[in-house]
Image 1: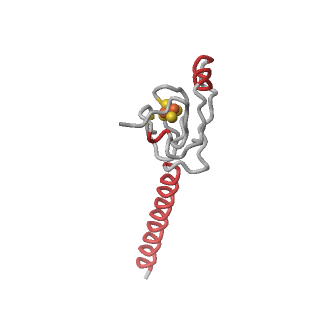
Image 2: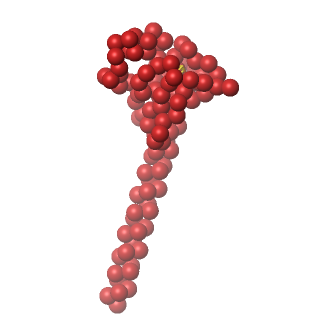
Image 3: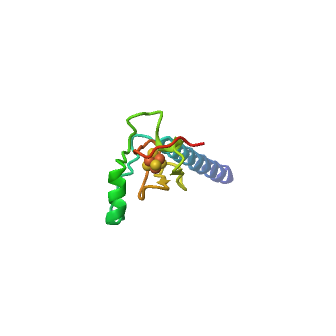
Length: 108
Ligand code: SF4
C-alpha cells in the first residue's frame, strides 16, 4: 500500500513537471512570435555612435507596416533563445522580431 502511494506521488510530481514544461514552451513560443510583452529597447550597452546609428535609421520595436518587419528583413539575426530579442547586422542592440527601421530590405 505504501509503495503504491509513493509511486502515485512520483507519477503525480512527474506530471506536474511535464505540465510546467509545456507552459514554459508555450510562453517561449508566444514570445518568439513577437508578443506584446517583448521589449527590445534597452540601449544602455551601446556606444554613442552605435546609438546614433540606431536613431538615424529610426529603429522602432513595432513596425508601422506589419508586412515589413525585422523577421522578414535580410539583416535580421534570430535570437539564440525563443522569446528573446534578436539582432541586426546594421544596428547594434536588441531587435524586436516585429520591429522596423529605414534600412529594411526583404529577405531573399
Ligand atoms: Fe530590422 Fe532594420 Fe535591422 Fe532590418 S535593418 S533587421 S528592419 S532593424
